[in-house]
Image (tube, rainbow, N blue to C red; front, side, top):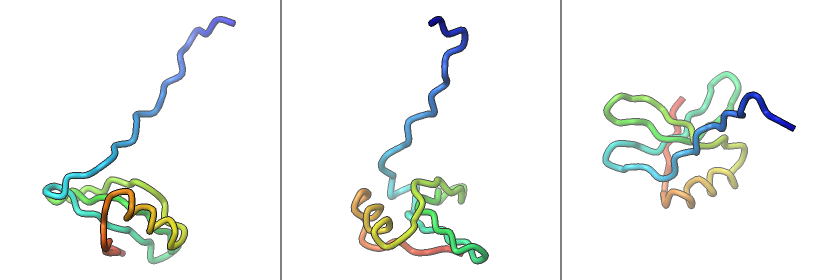
Amino acid sequence: MIRLFSKKRPPAPERGFDPEAEKPVVRASVCTGEKVAGFRDLRTGRFREVMLIRDRKDLDAFMKEYGLDMVPTEY
């Protein structure tokens, strides 16, 4: 089978963060209660999503993966 068009692959997710330039944050929706863990750029304020938080296990996995003790929640 010959492919006429190649499939575009999504870019690889960035791992790690720079504590000098980014702050770990859990963003929570007031309306739906959905929580997303990620990093807020201290200079621009832009939020980079890393993973969806469904329960305490997900939050613990996020903190362990990035070596964090505490992550504040923003609404």
